[in-house]
Image (cartoon, rainbow, N blue to C red; front, side, top):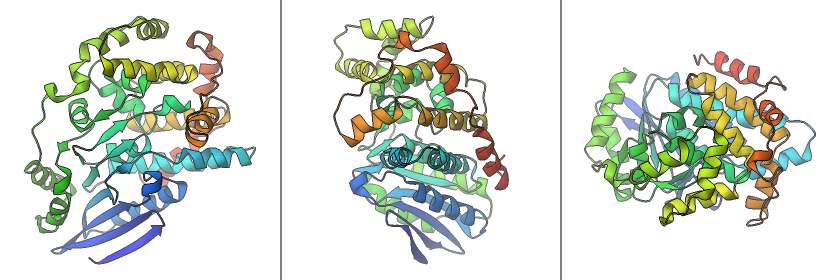
Amino acid sequence: MLNSVNATDNLSFAETKAGSFAVGAVILNNPRALNALTLAMFQALAAKLLAWRERPEIACVVLHAESEKAFCAGGDVKALVGELEKSSTLESAAAFFCHEYFVDYLIHVYPKPILCWADGITMGGGIGIMNGASCRVVTERTMMAMPEMAIGLFPDVGGSYFLNRMPDGCGLFLGLTSVRFDGRDAIALGMADFLLHAEKKTAVLAGLSDLPWTPDGAANRRVLRAYLGKFAETIGRQDSAVMARHEIIKFLTNQPDSCAVDQALCRWHGEDEWTKNAIHGYAAGSPTSAAAIFAQLAGAKSLSLKEVFLREWDMALNFCAQSDFREGVRARLIDKGRKPNWNPPALAQVSEAEIARLFSQAHGQGDQLARKFAAHGLS
């Protein structure tokens, strides 16, 4: 170990020698909050990744958590809403989402291989820092979800991009229902690359020091993937609970419009418990979020990943300005278990004007994130 530096009370960094090279590690350590990511954590993570990017001796970066229960349950939206309630401006939200999406995109375009070990709960913002990694590892304990609709938000952190690239209808279904899926599902959906047993973590990470690293990032990515492949379990489509229900999912989502999808979901009376639970999640979520998700995915099919993050940042600030988001966080996460008072209470009552507002650039917020990308050479 070369060094270990505490970035915050909940995040630390380490470097381990690997011959003439080194492996950098980002360790999340706030188990009481399921490693939820705060603004300070995003700021520290961005600074360290940028510094490692410029150091030729850093051959690889690892993202993982000390906790066996959770890799990362998402962004700390309780703290965000608390800040919003104290102020009449959106400055706290602008800073939070700017740093979050910057980190997410930086991981996607990072010139060196990044291994993300996503063991346990990995949701929302946790998927955001996982999804762009060169090698995404899940385990038998991994539990994933994009649960934003349940709190009156939308599946962000690049969701417009990766949900649209899932098998037919699956991305829309997962975004609308907040349903949970496991590591085998993640492999089948293209959300993970390798399924490894959790007990192998210590040995696998220790073995990174012995790999034949070079100054070539692309070559190192191939080395890392070949190494992880030696430990990985073979996963087929038949092992995925989501893909086992793909025909049902296609039937429910391949409808003429959002109202028809809404009716198909609400009128489904099958016996499958997994599908029942998913539809219950849809029925309990914010109708405004549902309407926004339909428009979000439909309008992002031809967008680049960078364009997706800029568009989602606009959406995030508009949701913070006025939507069900604050109510959803108060009811579900702060008061814990209280039923939110969604406004309006039904999808059919969400106006076209409201959807247009949620996708507007009324606050001029897109420029701030674009400038941050440009300042650090993220094309």
